Length: 490
RNA sequence: GGCGCAUUCGUCUAGUGGCCCAGGACAUCGCCCUCUCAAGGCGAAGAUCGCGGGUUCGAAUCCCGCAUGCGCCGCCA
Image 1: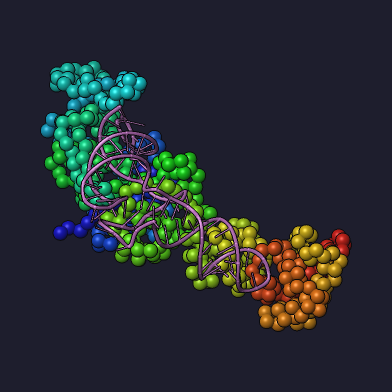
Image 2 (image 1 turned 60 degrees about the vertical axis):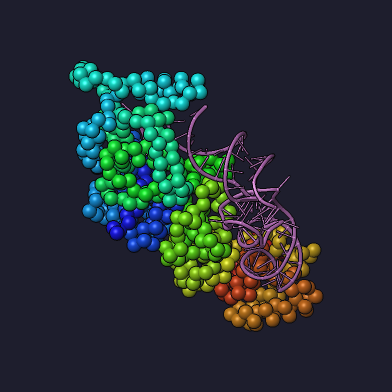
């Protein structure tokens, strides 16, 4: 038995779309699981829309998700070239075989005529299929019109028959080819049409399994007819349910964040995105839902792919991301967070890596995305914070009584320091009871004074990381603020 | 209009004739923990299994019809 060959075939017409990423991931898992080969082929026959720079973003997206390929652009392999646009000679060669066998004829109908006919058919609620106008042009007449300089596409001659195949996901499928019109497989400018190029490429690259989106089901029947005409064996086909947007339409670029690079930029972890998308239409058959790449390679199989179209709702992605962030070591998380924190404009270099990691550790279970660190870590790195007076003052208390309490805190911090959280807790609780306040009533003003925020990690740990000097300086500033002194040196 | 595919809590889904007056997860709400925020624990609410027929002692599961959605029907991919 030959080694299975799977492929992914993105078109470089935009960023890496989440649906394509899922398809690529599924193929990757299948290839790895079966010990097969994974081929990357760029389908850039849409000359006008394909842009080389998109190739790079797509590659980066795949790599970010952990999807590696064995053959493809930049890597090479025995079945190159791996860009469809560089394979047109091959396509023409195979077109020749079809011509020789009488499966193809030249069609002189202009795009305008065809569009008109289509529009009319639609209006009259008839199926918009090609009339067959040029189907029986004689060889002589064809040659004559060609000589006269008319351009002509190549059309595939469809013979009535039932086309059937067993889909790896959907089971037995069939369609009546008698309902189609003859279809163009090569443009008048000699560039092959996608549907034909795919057949030739998959065959010549010896692809054994074509797993792709369900929007290709109808194409599959046409492709099978071409395989048969060429007398070459088709690969096994599998069609994945389409990811829909909230309005239940095919997910498109207009639906907001649907490209992998956006998730990258938003501070999602690749393992979370991967875990999230793999579950869009697949499940392991039990109640597990956290999967590493290795586990997925082990577990994944097409017969557990569901056939209904999932709606794309990123709610659960945040949860996955949080779980993965909490599961990391602090060092690892800090490393991943660093570029995001810098991008947010925080100066994390001058205070040293140890300080940064301690701060990250305190926020680890409080963030959903790497970008959150930019906000949540700010007070650790700013010179001063701006406490909101509304929350700085003790609940139902006065500014002056809060100020005097904070002043006492300054004294205690001076005397006992903040390095031992147990000690801090005990003297601060002691002060609270001395004042006759509930602990929380004292802690909140201290929190707001030293962090500028009401929502922070536990107070004593936070003070410990900030260090004595920062805490004292911020408390002093808060006292000044509370007493209406415009500014004061600490 | 034709053909194809699909239809279970808001969302992702489990379920392949009796274990299901439908299970899990996210989100939501409540309680607990607690110095705030999280995290965590516990719990609640949430699906007449798209609708209508049939088959069967028994159907979310099988059959038929309908509806709805999506896809394709391009010298786009």
